[in-house]
Length: 103
Image 1 (spheres, one colour):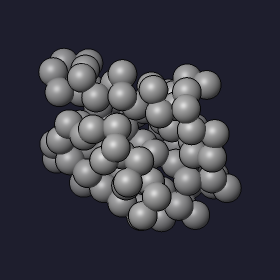
Image 2 (cartoon, helix red, strand yellow; image 1 turned 45 degrees about the vertical axis):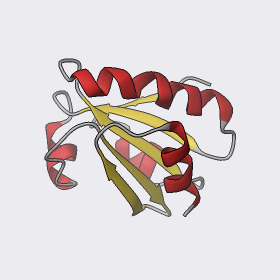
Image 3 (cartoon, helix red, strand yellow; image 1 turned 120 degrees about the vertical axis):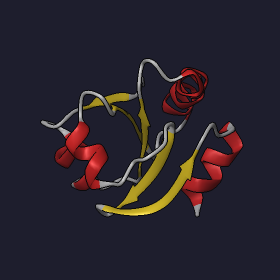
Image 4 (cartoon, rainbow, N blue to C red; image 1 turned 60 degrees about the vertical axis):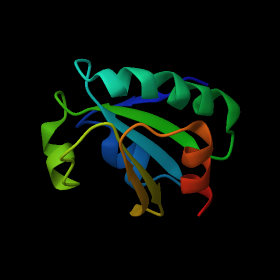
């Protein structure tokens, strides 16, 4: 399944109310490292059935990015039971993202 595109309207339902762990890729179209992170995130979305994989464009959802103090992108956060359980800033390998989810 493709990554879910998040926005101000669906963030709470898709992330905070999810019964599965959620990986959120905070990114922007103009960000070079984000463009490299994107295919890795999409690959995880296709491979992982027990995790919801989402992308949030920080330019389109500035309030959410601000709420989570996103200062640099790409930033990846993992949410479990509506709470942040892990965070990584900068371009991450597939293995590093899996480790972040599983911790």
